[in-house]
Image (cartoon, rainbow, N blue to C red; front, side, top):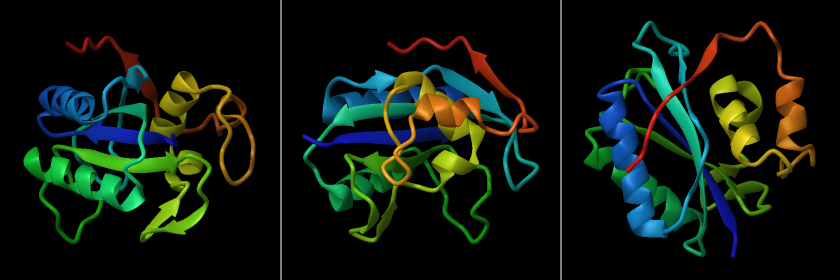
Length: 163
């Protein structure tokens, strides 16, 4: 069964949105592997700081069904979609990888390029799956994180308990 890694982020009603997203994923997909929760500055805007984590689970739902569920979950938590893709949001759920799939699958580019671009995606992914390999370049996530540019915006691991 393919393993899906999901990036979870929120900078509006952060704690409730992150807890709610994790609870919804548990109800829908069962056991999850969760990274720590990190706080980071907003990228691309002057919005409030984000809480970010990565969640993983095994699923045969398929890419289209997973993406539809992720969008519906964002909407259920009050996500407002507008022209500004960096606008503050209650919830941002992105499919990072789905098994070893590479390329455009059901309209979704896999693996998601944010893995290699943003510390708030790569750090939690490297934490929760350090020996996992990037589907395109084959490198381990822990290696990619160790080589990530050190001039990145600060990323702070915060204490966060899930029910």
